[in-house]
Image (cartoon, rainbow, N blue to C red; front, top):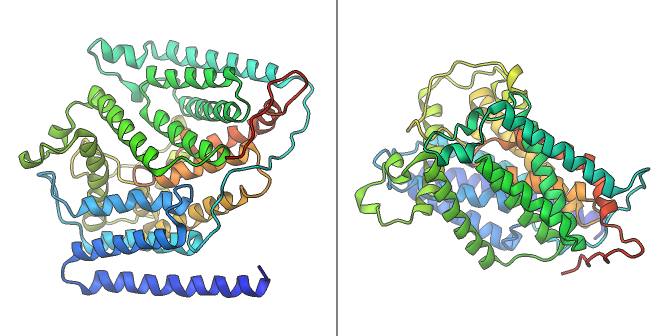
Length: 438
């Protein structure tokens, strides 16, 4: 494609997105039925993803928008007796973030098939097998240390009838880095396995996942699962949508079982109306973690004096033993649902412009990383994109871009990238690496 054609194409997308932004805000402002306007905007975004992205689930914009569109849908429902009407100001903030994401990650971008060209690693003085053995020993010692300091294993404690107390588990100030290391190791082992077929790496992957179960850390189980799906789709072959939907349904069932084990009946906690008791429990969990997020944010926007411009949104980037405390009034609609998406703490700190700025930076970074995988890629590059994708896809739940146990994976993935590439390099007498083609 010539440089002139690229320029005209870019200007065309800029103009298109300006028109879309105007139409969206006019629709919200003019229509008397705000909830119907929201549904029309959501439908238009679905059409946009179909036309310009082909519903490429690997694309960061698609991964970002789909959960938020589910939230918009649930925001217009009344499954819970606690349900409130969401105000225009809240919808306008979400729409502003959407428009920002379209400008930096939208347009008709070439979809990746599978990664075929890998960066060549540089040799180390010791073998990659020795390095991984040392890492395994360090990780297991680190795991035992967390258990000894806590004095219990959350899963066993929960099975005995006591509270799992998972939030207070581990070495204070260090446990978050341990979880980030565990996630990175898990993903690296999975990538090596799908590239080489060596069973030792899938064994390590399963062991780490089992440790997550013992520690009752759903966030790690979910993040590793999502990252693994993206990695597999990038390296081996794309997983079909129907398989993803079926897997999501199974994951939802498991999530609801673990959630009930930790928290009790979700129907009672969420105040589900009697006429909606027939709705399957996994859907109730999805509803609860969608609707109450936007409801909490609506309370913050309409009832508080935010933004406070006090850098409070950055506190999760600081180790817990150094983290400052901020005294805030609670704007939770229901106290049990204290998650409010990435927008809540950023708006509380820096307002609408802060939400727009973070959305633009994060989606631009993710989009460029995705397109960069079409050239020579490393395991560190793939792993980094998997982390960024997870942060975008689960931005409806929490600000994982500013959460050390997740975003710190990128540091460990970069550190492990070269030795992981060496593990994938065929040598005499070794198992021949699997082809990276579909």
